[in-house]
Structures are given as C-alpha cells and as structure tokens.
Length: 187
Length: 335
Image 1 (cartoon, chains in turn green, purple):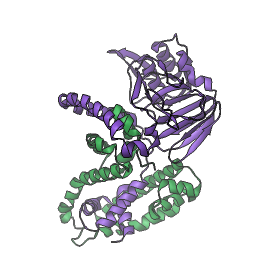
Image 2 (image 1 turned 60 degrees about the horizontal axis):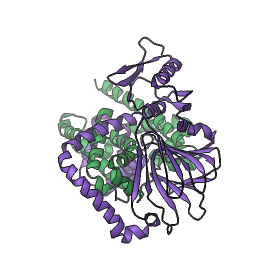
Image 3 (image 1 turned 135 degrees about the horizontal axis):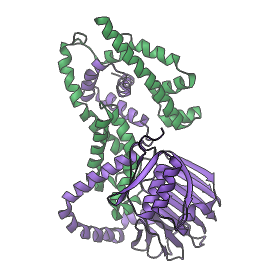
Image 4 (image 1 turned 90 degrees about the horizontal axis):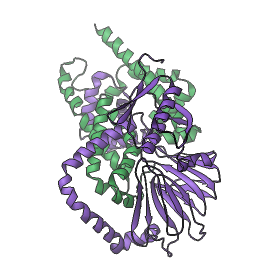
C-alpha cells in the first residue's frame, strides 16, 4: 500500500490545497468508511464519522502535507473515531446486567466462543466452495491482507474481496438464524 | 490475552459475527485500557485487511465533503484573506533561500531555477502554452499545469506537474528526460507525443502514447509504452493496465470532439460538464456504471449530447433547471 506522500506533492499542495487534499480524500475515504462501518451500527453513521475524520484532517492539513506515513496517520484518526462511535454501544453493557444470560463474570472471550455459535460458524466454513473457504481462512484465521492472499493464490485482489464478502453474507445469515433459534428456545 | 484472540474478537466484531447481545460487552472491552498492546495490533491488522477499493458513493461523498469544507472556510474567510499574500511570498522564499535539506537532497527541487508558474484552463475552454525548451502543451477544460519558467541547464531532468488533461509534444533532449508528475505517478519521456488524462475526480490516470517512448512509474512499479499503447493507472488500488488503442481517438478533444468508447456514464457526464461548462445533476437511481460508445463533432452542443445519451439509454430523460441540467429516470420507463 502506497503510504508515503511524494515530497513534491508539497509544491502542488502550496498551489492549491483543496485539489491536493481531494486526491487524499479519493485515495483514503473508501477505506476509512469501510473500517468505521465495522464499528458503527449503520452506513449512515459510518458516512458521518468518515466525513468528520476528513474534516479534522483538513483542519490539520499543513501538518499532513509533511507527514511521512500518511496511511498510519489516517489509520490512527479512523481508529480513534471508530472507538468514539462505540461509546453509545458500550454504555448499554451496563444495563445488560439485568439480562440473565450475561453473568457478571462473563469474559469477553465468551462472546467469541459462546455456546454452539463457534461450532455453527466452523461448520458453515467447511460447507463453503473450496476457493472461498481457502480465501476466507487465509484472511480471518491466518490474518493475511487481501493483496497477500491474491499473490499467494495467483488471483486478483478484487476476487479475494468478492470471496470474503460472499462468505460474510452467508455467515451473518447463520448467526442471525442461530440467535433467533436460541431466543425461541428460551420461550 | 494473546494477540491472536484479540484479533479474532475484533475481526468477528467488525464482521458482524458477534451475537447482538454480546456486542455491548465487546464494545466496552474494545474501549478499555486492558490488553492495550494486543488490541492495538488487532485494530491495525483489521485496518490492513480493509479494502481501499472505490465505494459506489465516492463521488457523492467527495461533493458532500467539499460543501462542508467550503462552509468551514467561509466562516474563517476574514482571517484567511490577510494570510494568503503572506503565505505565497513566504513559501517561495523558503524554497529559494532556506534550500539546504529540502532543496538539494531531492534532485527534482534542484531542477527548478526558481519559480513554478501555473497555467490553468477553466471548464468550457481549452488552452495551450510552449515551455522554455520548446515543448508544446495543450490543456483541456478544467486542467492545470505547473511548470518552471526556465528549465535549469544544471538539472538532470525537465519536470512539470499536471492535474486534469493535457497533450504534450515534447522537444527532444536525450540528456534531459521530460517528466510529468501526476500525484505519485511519474510519466517519463524522451522526445515524444502523448496525452495524459488525470482529473482529480477520476480514479484512473490514463496515458496514451502517439509517438516515441514513455515510461510510467510510481514507487512500486513501472510500465513502458510504445506508440498506440495506453496505460490506465488506478489511483485507488494502484494497479496498472496496458492496452493497445488508436491514439488519435484520445486527442479528439484537441479538435473539440468528444469520443467515448465503452465509457461508464459517470465519466461521460464528467467530461461533458467540463467541456460545456455546465453542471449536471444525476439522480441517484440512474445507473452511472452503464457504458456508452458514441462520438460528437465540435459543432454539436450539450443538448445534442444529452439527446443521444437519453436515446441510447431508453429509460433516461433530462431537462434544464435553474441553469443546470438534471438527468433522471423516465417515469414508468423500462427497468
């Protein structure tokens, strides 16, 4: 990932800051929005948070034009904004004490290994078409980046992204079904 | 907590695979100070795995941002006016005098024997200029080129900066390769004729070679072009794609013609806006990814273009409204 700003960019920047900044916007906005969306509830909120990040970046633009690793800088701002957006969700954790399912000593790891959910997810992954499963495992289990996966499997980055999206769509459907069934069982 | 578990939790949370009732708990954990190092590594990993492919609403998001930015700047305007004059003078002085690290460490700074001049062409027009070495540059609507008043004899290269679209007829000088900078991209030529299309709002930079030899590179990769070859560089994912084309088609704009060959509607509209200097609002329901192949002579106007577009599409209609054009779906139309 191109993370550095060309030092000669500063010349263009001095001439027309808005146009130079627009180039940064185009390059990083999609990524910031996607990243934030994982933490926010919905796309509308993600858009607002992302716009806010770039507005703050604009206000600091003088500093930005001399930053060496722009990717890392923007990442830090996006992470800060995403965690901020989680504040309202986090607050609800206190009121969940009434919920008999979440005991006081519940560890966050239980969220991951809760009940049979892990089993269900693993079974779903086994059922995926081979290439999709391979890509998904390399991403979510081995923690590889999309371009690393693309290079290893000799496919395009776009194909990698498509496989991961498709896998998530299926998995989310199952998580939803699982939750509904669990709730029904408690009735 | 080890890094792997932290990553799995963050990853699953972001993927939407943590059961709803556990989300508040995980959210609270994400925000607290425990296991900070593991969490930071997890967040960073998720960022690295986040795609930077263009979102379908990118252009609209950019416009939204520009409006907010303009509003913000207008509020600060009073103070800014006074600063602007000082800023330019100071900037130039710094470049010329402070020299030192910045000036001599990068040979390209050294290439400029002083000021960088700017030649800008507004929407609805085209323009041109001749550089100090005899290179001829023609600029299309909405384009700007920055160039030194004189190319330094001591520099190893001749360098200019482009935003928008321009056609270059570069004077031969084997000792001094000619370089066009477009963002992080460098287009390097000897003596040659080529066209570069690199508008800010386009995600692609398109370089088309007529004659001579050109290399297009950024820090990671480079490509070599022969006559009638074209390189499309995607600013978003950094990919370069080379194809064979009829280079004449890509300089049709110099004769006032508009030529589209399987261009998505979004880009067609962008070119039309710039050429005729008119704002076009496209309704969100219109499919801007649909491709069109058509061409227009220089005696045809914006209505001719809009008529052809709506006729080819079949389900679109346009009208003039308050000095701009609005393009939308036909009511009760097909699809």
